[in-house]
Amino acid sequence: MKCNSSAYTVESVLKGHPDKICDQISDGLLDQYLEKDSYAHTAIECLGTSNTLIVAGEVNSVITVPVEEYCKKLYQKITGISSISVVNLLSQQSSQLRMAVENGGASDQGIMYGYACDNKYNYLPYGYWLVNKIAKRLDSYREKSEKFLSDGKVQVIISENVISKLTINVQHLPDIDMEQLRMDIQENVLYDIDKTNVYINEDGEFVCGGFTNDTGLTGRKIIIDTYGGLAPHGGGAFSGKDPTKVDRSAAYMCRFVAKNIVANGFAKECCISVAYEFGKEQPTMLYVITDGIYSSQIKNIVETNFDFRPQAIIERLNLRKTKFMPTSTYGHFTNPDYPWENIIQL
Image (cartoon, rainbow, N blue to C red; front, side, top):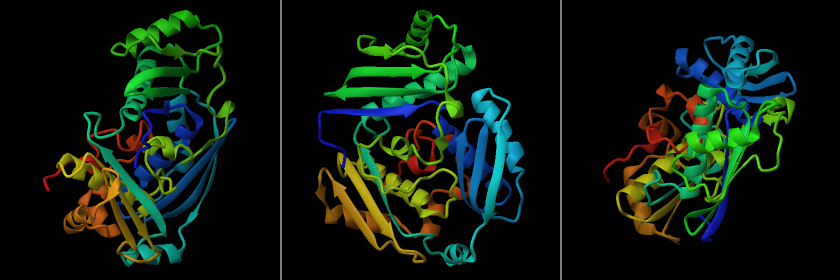
């Protein structure tokens, strides 16, 4: 469950953050495969450093994708930088993994969690919802105005559900008028937020960003991408993984169930946990905590209304028709239009 402290800190990152670049490229490649082969199996990971992007992982598909060309185009779209070397190390998925999935079982063992709380911020903690909204606004404003560059971070300290400190750092050109940049962000991004405790590029220059500043890696921001550390996470990353991977699909299902338990008035707060064993259809464990305690009654409701078999999850959430690249920024649970965010009647 969410930490009970009245004060907590969460963060989000912009599209040009090195880890986010890798997440977007991994999910972008996934979408390329699924667009023409909805049964493609992928586990694609990227590592970016300096002017090199390494793409690795396993793929099983009846189609081929121009990996190097696609990565270069997407990288330029994200960062505005046209020059990057792409090393393609993708390999064929092993028959061992493929057979387990084709038989309807889980592709791996693991633990997945889903969380929801009763509020107007898409059933998420206020601070977590806020930092992702600000990150999205910053990217949108940058793309329209070109006032700053693509890398950046947003962090907020929440105390008693009020902003105690909001810190924003954005990459910028060397000759930028920093005071003007701060004013522009306050006016165009933070227009409905109290400016009292806002700090923008407080420590000065942020000229070097992206892969030239730090190594990027797919999945490294998975805690930011789920619940910001305010709820449990099983450890498995999402980006680049097709819907048969329970690390991703079962985590989506857990969120779907937790949100609907809360939305239907069964609890104010809900955390769902499942565990799988390799090759088996049914979860080896299903655990439900509502309002801080284990609830066998609500577990019965969950078991009656929701099927956690991997193929059933894919069908219920229509994951073979889902575009995954949009999930690689601003959190996997912040957009109410995602299929696992739908509210149903129980």
